[in-house]
View 1 (cartoon, rainbow, N blue to C red):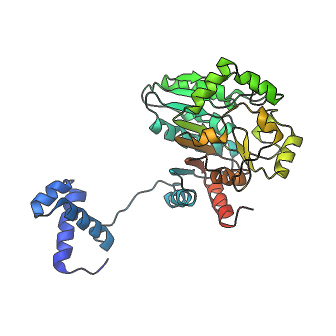
View 2 (view 1 turned 180 degrees about the horizontal axis):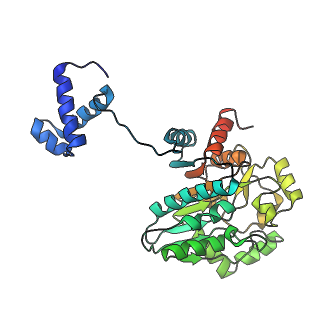
View 3 (view 1 turned 90 degrees about the vertical axis):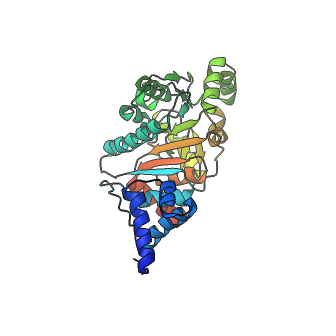
Length: 321
């Protein structure tokens, strides 16, 4: 603690007790001590700065607030939520999904529109989503789906599951995420049902996204949207990961590949226009994908596991290559 003369120390202690222990307002304290309210605020700040007041926060096991703050500062995020790392991939996904569900619950109010992506991490969120009250909100699919993956991975199913748990409404997009050609895509986008669903998603207040990798076992390959050969071509172009089928390199630059004109979903620019984009991600293969997407300026809130958090920060510090 900073050395203080007796008179100042006593004044700081008295005012600090009134504020922190007796829970009196600054106006009440100002009246009692014959001070202005701004003067009381300055004295409270000095009590903290000199060590007259020390704040202890009892942090639960596994919560690393310093790591979250480093992440926010490094990437200019609104928030970062880091879950403890565990060896089992399914359990890890569940821990991240639980935190994503809790964050979503805190954000939602009536009339909120939430755009939803595909992926296993986002698909795990509904299992943990339990709002205390009914919320008249809309969950809208931000991209097409694929019949070749389990239901929890498809955005339509995730939207329905989330809507059921809060008495909200699901806006489904009945189209595949990839089609045969740009011409087919254009014809589909002329259909009212498809165009309307994407318009709702683009007008969202919040987006809940997964971050996909660029390995041969990523969701886009497993779902049959891209072949392994196409994925290898993307990697040669520098692709490290994607959001909604939009691939980026390690520096966040959008990779415009031949398949890009066949995607049915929101574009990167449309995502950037959504006020709060939340990404939930787990998986040991994801650090480079996470870094690329963060550098693309798409994500506002990132929810991830501790291992990925450390690896992404290390990658960013060394240039990411």
